Amino acid sequence: MHYTLPKTLFIFWFSTFFFCCAHASEIRLEASKVNIRTNEEFSVDLVVSNKELINALGGRVVFPEALLEVKEIRDGNSIIHVWIERPQLSAPGEIVFSGITPGGFVGADNKVLSILFEAKQEALAPISVLQVQAFRNDGSASEIGLSIRDTVVEIKPGDSRTRKEILYDHEKPEPFLPIIASDNSMFNGEYFVVFGTQDKGSGIKQYEIREGRWGRYQEATSPYHIRAQKLNTDIYIKAIDNAGNERLVIVPAPAPLFVWKYYGLFAILIGMIVVATVLYKKRHE
Amino acid sequence: MNRVVHIFVATFLCFYYAVWSAFAITVEVTATVPGCGDGVIGIGEQCDGSNLGGSSCSSLGFTGGVLSCASLCTFNTTQCTSGSSGGGGGGGGGGFTPIPSTNIVFTGRAYPKSTVTLLKDAEIVATTVAGANADFQVTISGSSGGNYLFSIYSEDAKGARSPLQTFPVSVTSGVTTKVSGIFIAPTIILDKREVRRGDTITIFGQSVPGSEVTINVNSAEEFFIKKPTDATGAYLLHFDTSVLETGEHHARSKASLNGEITAFGKSAGFIVGTKNIFAEVPKSAVKGDLNSDKRINLVDFSIVAYWYKRLNPPASVDFNNDKKVDLIDFSIMAFHWTG
Image (spheres, each protein chain N blue to C red):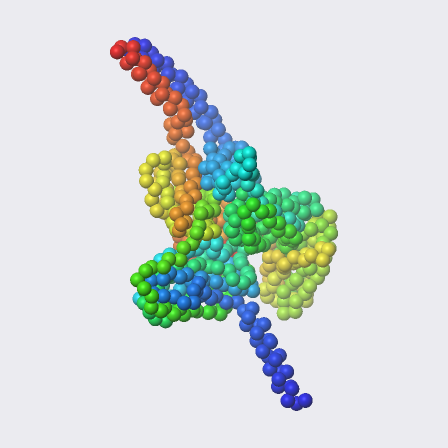
């Protein structure tokens, strides 16, 4: 009988450990492929599993730049809804990210971002996540500890052909509603426009803005300092995802020039002038 | 030549009269007092009443539908469609097969006749008013397939707001998804910020009529007191503070009805000390509402983000008073988010 007691205790301890740590809050990196060859693309997802509501998350993903080349960083379907620092290369071999999810998120396998790499050399390539900060949705931003699981990919020799990992995305980014605002602490109190949306596929690549009906679009970030401070021109904002799909939203000018507000009447006037001129010329030919 | 001149002058006069008339009307409209509900789109407003400022579902990036204006002078896009147009046409005689719409239906309980606000991915997509029994239903249409995080909150008769309740929903195109059994946590208000030890502090709020509210007062020893709600959903507790130690305490509440139970709502803090200081009327969206529009959304976020990692931020954006704007401040803002 006394030999079964340690066994019982062991089973009890192991079960407790298993249920404890299997459901602990963690952030981990998951590679899409196990066997990778040089010149081959593969993706690595950053995923969070948590038992308490988290509403703010930030950190850094580091990797050997000589072995892995970043082809794309995707935030499609990310659990982070508003980026403070949109995932991007902050330095060679380092991607920084931070953002919030109002109301918080909880549960298993919440995807934060996805990195598309191309393997460059035969080697073992460690990919790690550092300086992770996660805060509870409790109004006082108490920090929650996340255990970290990094990953290592083994790159084997391959041929010279590049094997791409393709993500099919035919959906536009989500519709969004830009807002014109002003604040004394920004842009010397002048008007700016804020905007932001999500893409459920490949993720947002960039935004472009054009003020007025003509001209070229230029890349922009939110908040965007409006040049036409009289707010007399429409503002065209495009959200473009990594697959090239575009969502265009037009912010009507709050104080349009009457010539644009009544452009229909101007068009009629011009049309009548043209007709009159044509009639005159025909009459005198 | 004279005829051309005559035509031109006549046309110009007609146009000038038309524009002047229209411009005069415009001057009349802009002479009104600004504010949501006055029919004039002011700064910070997307629309006002029936005035959509020339916007439509299409101009906002949707594929079609009917755009309207919600009570907060924000666009109501629930009737806009955004799904990609699939190939129509059935077989046989060339008949048209309608594409089934993608709907998401939310049902649950809030507070009697309260405004219930639904957010999709942190942006307001719909509002509705709960019934006298606190039941509500809100439907949104036209979403694309994908994973969304919906949040919902309500505001009671005294302006106290519930915390955001979030629901991850996986939406399939052409399918109606139902999210039911939502039970919004009670609101909680205290009549005093500080109470003299031994005096009474009044804890009250609102939930579903006929429910039972459990009030938790956090102390070295935790207290749980149950109170029923009345026909208006209101509950009230006079708590004797003689059982509490001097210092800071918190109170929170949850409701139960027919076997369903809410999570605890927002926590309200008070001090047990040597004097009574009555609380001010609760103001909605104070922390994080940097532009004082009673909402905490992308505009406020952008203001805070401007000061991210910058030196000497103003106190208004430093929510935890540590002289810097970092992820902690954003977490506090995210908790109070209203969309």
